[in-house]
Amino acid sequence: MKITCIGAGYVGGPTMAVIAEKCPDIEVTIVDVNEQRIAAWNDENIDNLPIFETGLHEIVKKTRGKNLFFSTDINNAIHTADIIFISVNTPTKTYGVGKDMAADLKYVELCARQIAAVAEGSKIVVEKSTLPVRTAEAIKTILANNKKGLQFQVLSNPEFLAEGTAIQDLHNPDRVLIGGDQTPEGLNAIETLTSIYAKWIPRERIIQTNVWSSELSKLTANAFLAQRISSINSISALCEQTGADIDEIARAIGADSRIGSKFLKASVGFGGSCFQKDILNLVYLCRHFNLPEVAEYWEQVIIMNDYQKTRFSNKIIKTLFNTISGKKIAFLGWAFKKDTNDTRESAAIYIADELMQDRAEIHVYDPKVSADKIYADLEYLQLHRRKHHNEGLLQYEQLSHEEIRKLVTVHQNPFNACKDAHAIALLTEWDEFKTYNWQQIYENMFKPAFVFDGRNVLNRNELTNIGFEMYSIGKPL
Image 1 (tube, rainbow, N blue to C red):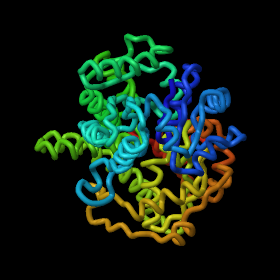
Image 2: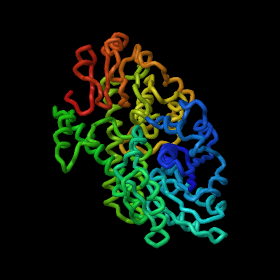
Image 3: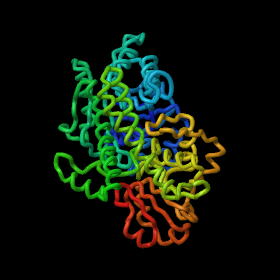
Image 4: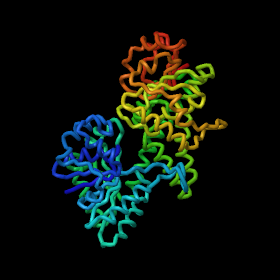
């Protein structure tokens, strides 16, 4: 059997690598139009892979060139494949109908058209990208209109990976979801894909559904997880006003078996490629199907997340005596979470932007994110700023390429980033931050020395005893 995956990103790369690892009898080819990305996947120096994910390097090193291949020859990979996974980007639209809410499906449609044009035999086509419900209908229509009379089966097989633990999630998933048509041909295609996963995953964890349930389950799962984060963050604001401790509350309610303890960690807000995008997509779908009350319910999750980031920025400005112009503020962390180099929708991007509006000088250190990526994130935000629900009267100024580089400095050493800083904002929960010599950092900062712990990972008592003025999310002031 031969599998082709179109898209060599955060989903396609790790997923196909694990399939190649667990199924040595299957030839897996990952293709992408981005020549630079494919070159990085093929780089002899395994440390130069385009994605950092614990355990991924070892798997690629073991399988690459044996039954795992990376290529830009998409047509050939389509032609020879039995199963084709579509794992391309589905960003939120930045133009036209559904701007700032609907998923942009142009890359998915282009894949479907290319498959229909190139394929010489019938194929199983698998949606791996996160897609709005009923997308399979459009893919089916395009594939059915091929000129060769070929028959295609379209399956939905959404990913449920958490970045930073993606390989672990692939090796030992809570469930694998496969949706398809409930026809003999559709059920046979479902079983074909099921048999691949079953080589290392117990069949009782492989859930088979119709294609629409599978598509909507992915959006719903992300919406529920994001909802929990926004819920605990909303209570963190109340804690700061009442003297309650958000960690104690999370522990108390998490002990209830009906609630559970996961995703109850207060923070500066969620990021990543999925949560915001998928909820906005869900909101758009609800409005499209004339369900305004449902749309407003889920939109509040995004509003609360925006509020938490702005509240954190405002706390920094207010604490630094309502003036941050020309002041050095060190950012520890830029990735949206630890153990990944993914920065999509990272809270750090938005907080940096809000502080730069007041001309703060931002000095960034992240162990896995490059300077080029940090500057690109800030420039992309200037061009594609989504309307924040909590902007109020604040008019965001679009900063130029030169202004961003004047205000933002990226460091390779965290102690240099913190030297002569007025404040430190911890924005990614990298484990190494907890082990730093905070006494040394304190001695080299302006006094009073402020620390704003946006992930609640630092030892408050230790830092306070050193002399820091400490702010933590949801902690008594």
